[in-house]
Length: 190
Image 1: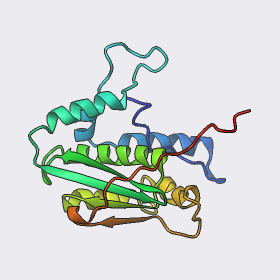
Image 2: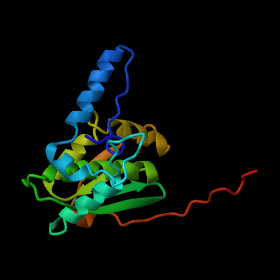
Image 3: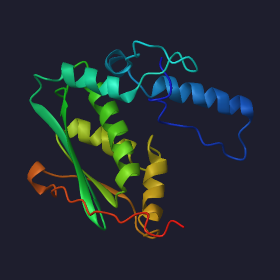
Image 4: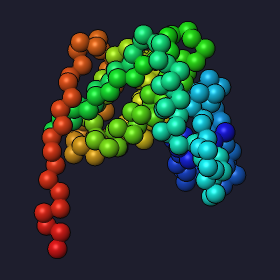
């Protein structure tokens, strides 16, 4: 199993954890978070092996392979991430519910959402698409889910530490549109 690009669920040690328990937990989390379907589609090694990490599988190759395999799919997962100064949106073709590779859709969507959250921030996550896929992502982005760290961190990142990061499943027509606000940077760099 490839590392780096898809080691998305880091373990965070608790005071009572021993190094042995931490190592077992890390191995379990890494091997159990990605289904066989997701591994088959998303673990794509580059033609030139990375010398320091021979198992490295870049996200760009995974996404390219996934999009090639979902070209004929008619179902889409859409999401919106509203924030104080705008809203980020995305639309991803997904395998139909019940398809043997549907787990790959959930896994990739979770990774792409995580990436967008840290790029642009979000006060909440709005999902629209196949119900089972939306529910799986909602569970991952909740307390106790694989992305609990993002759920707990985003209120602080957004400057609203008392607010709760919510995940809602809505109809596609209820999603807000993309709105980006230019950010002024580097004016006082002396």
